[in-house]
Length: 222
Image 1: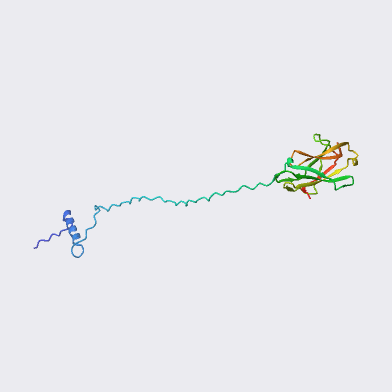
Image 2: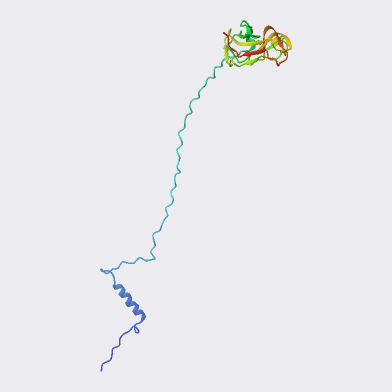
């Protein structure tokens, strides 16, 4: 009578022997040629990651505009001054009444002649009034302006003259006139306060409401 075999079971294999068998089995599985590539170990040091240092940047330079040379300074010649207004001291006044009169009025040409040594000008209306004498106050109102002749500038070289028509209305034609004998025309050149005198013998009216004189603007004498 034979003795029955005893089968080894997992219950009878010690735990350490089982682990050894398992390790040997895993080692037998590999690539042909016998060696298996070792797996990378987690303990292997990884390559260091270095952060590149920022390079120094060169500040941008904005090119400046080229220097401009200022244009050379120009010299402007002052304007040439024209003739100055005639001063009373360089003029002589006279009255020509040879033109006659009409309807109680006497017309004459009041002339201003340049007796100086330089060219000068006269512009506009002379002021004319009747006076009993050179130092006396005026008799009545000064001459009214007759604007039928527009004012203009008259240039007078030495010896030349400008003229203005002067009308005298006879005092006897005005009932309201208070008669005063006049012996001078007192004349003021436009822009001047120095009088010139022209001899005359007429009657003036002391009341300024009566207008006896009318004068036009100066123009070149004929």
